[in-house]
Every structure is written in structure tokens, then in C-alpha cells.
Image 1 (cartoon, one colour):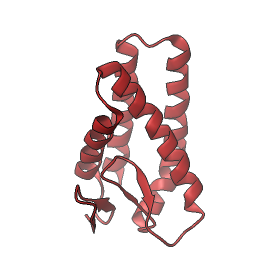
Image 2 (cartoon, helix red, strand yellow):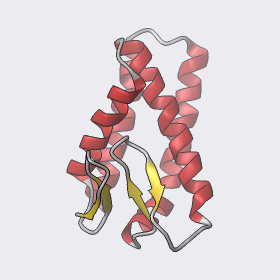
Image 3 (tube, helix red, strand yellow):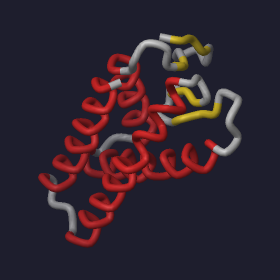
Image 4 (cartoon, helix red, strand yellow):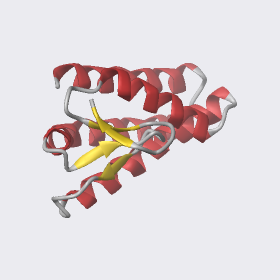
Length: 129
């Protein structure tokens, strides 16, 4: 799990650095800093939910409930909202689509996920790493 946390923090830091390097307006940079803070605070809860098999990582770089803990829905929705903000900003600054950014991030997540985490293949089928 430590590698998952480290990878996520690096990815978020990379996204924030990319946005800053490409000339983000101060107000937007502050928004991304708030997003990063929320994501960092949420990470321990998400790691527990992943290890229990309650949530999984989709092939679109988002989280999805896999069953069990319906209370996890709020955390999943909040995380997906924040990921969407980051993906949209990266897409805007790099001249690509949000979909491309999200799919790229999904591949990074697969590579860095801990054993036992639910992951979704490109064809939509689920497996545990």
C-alpha cells in the first residue's frame, strides 16, 4: 500500500507541477492545492476500502463501488470529483482530452496498485491484482 500512496502523491504532485509550469492563474492553482489536500486526507480511507475489496479502480481513472460498504459512496464520489478536476486541468493545459488523461492515469494506477486491489481491464472486466 505504501507504493500506491507514494505513486498517487507523485501523480498529484506531477499534475500540480504541470499546471503551475504551464502558467496557471493563481486562483486556479489555489483550487488545485485544495483538491490535492482533500485527496491526501481521503487516501487512508480509500486504501482501507480498496484492501477490503469494497472499491476498485476503473479503466477510466476513477473509483467504483464493488459492493459491501454503501457508506463508501460519499468518499468515492468526492474522490472522483477531485480526480475529474485534476484530469480536466491537465487536459486543458496539454491540449488533449479529459478521456485521454483519465485513461493514461488508469494505466498508471494499474501499474502501482497493491496486490488484492480490484482493477478494471480495457474491455470492462474486473480482476484482482
